[in-house]
Length: 454
Ligand code: NAD
Ligand code: UGA
Image 1 (cartoon, rainbow, N blue to C red):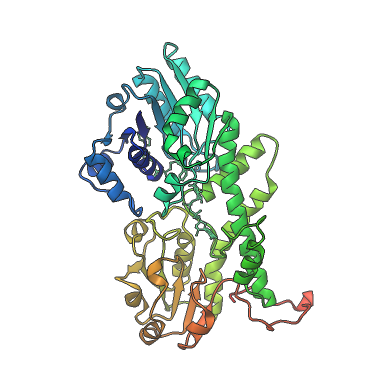
Image 2: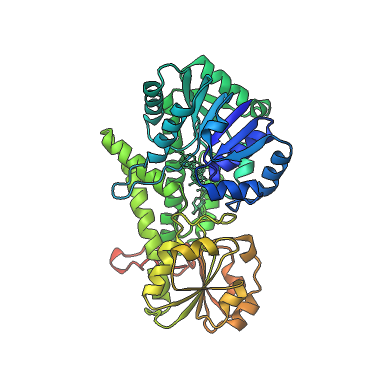
């Protein structure tokens, strides 16, 4: 099949390259000329494991190409995907649909053959129907259908997620749209991946509900982590203990500094606004949004507290600034709340990240960017691991201790065991690692210990 993908970002580039790997002929269109020129030279604009090789192979085999011209890409396309950004609108938090409707307008201008418009961007309920209405109003002559095909890939494991998804969701209202989508995803149905056909609104809501549920699961375990610290329990063991119950499941139960990224923060907020506007508020999700925001901010306060109430003039080594490992994406990363707060409190920040430093330097000022974890540690009073990159999982703790001036080791992803770090002379502060026996069996509320780092 011949398809056009509008948007060469995380989703457009990965899904376009994967569709071409399935054997389809894919043209990816982006209005960002530098991005397209770079892609034509073989330069991948984002860090995503395996993407460079996948793009190179499919370009070589003639199934994948890039352009800035939608008009050039559209002829003979059986499907045109919209995979442009839907960021939170400044001021009110609703999803900003400027790019989606912009793409729809361009489709209406350039459309010649019968075609299915497929929205892969995460869009509020009613958007697909509005896209269809706008294109039909502009081009009453055209044979056109829409399909909502939300994407569930994660950054850092995007290719595997796209090629081996738990399910594919397609909202469509015509046999023609359903047939085209079935053909496009045929390689997956051969692997028995469930393809769930629904109405447009249902498909749109599935995407928001999935992200909100996962964000809720993380926020739940983060609150349990605080409780663990207060009562002397261990959150990793609690997570395992509840996760073994198949009704709960073990995934997305890692306590940390709060969820970040390009999607959970904006999608939970968009769902809250959509639900309020529809007169059916989602109070759980509203609380999740507020608790997560507060958590990211509280991380810096906790670090300052554990360092004796002041970090003025102290050097803090920070390892990992991206919102998760294996990406250079800094959107809504917890580090964006933690680093400026520590700097504002007078700390000198010496940070390292395997892939995110270039992007982070545009967003966070006054940081000394270092060549590696040991360089960052040199002369530091404290070390803070914010992102659990593999490169930080087997650090030489003795060497770190020798290089550092202070002994505080903040491990916001619980990568290390306290005993291992403390044997090297550090004080280990994980998340939710309460010390057994550290509190009375039934704490008197008046004397309850405050939640801090375990
Ligand atoms: P992105 O910002 O990385 O990329 C969007 C691209 O679209 C940019 O390169 C931009 O130049 C281009 N663009 C904008 N308007 C255009 C137009 N009219 N014509 C051509 N190109 C245009 O965004 P992303 O992270 O890929 O996200 C895209 C959508 O997918 C969002 O709705 C997001 O919520 C959703 N999503 C993202 C992920 C993820 O992991 N990033 C996962 C699932 C779903
Ligand atoms: C998330 C979803 O997992 C994808 O299914 C979805 O397609 C995507 O959003 C999207 O809509 O864009 P992503 O943001 O790439 O994917 O990464 P996740 O692995 O979900 O992590 C998101 C955040 O939650 C990160 O900050 C991560 O550190 C945090 N997290 C995740 C935890 O704190 N604990 C966990 O157990 C899991």
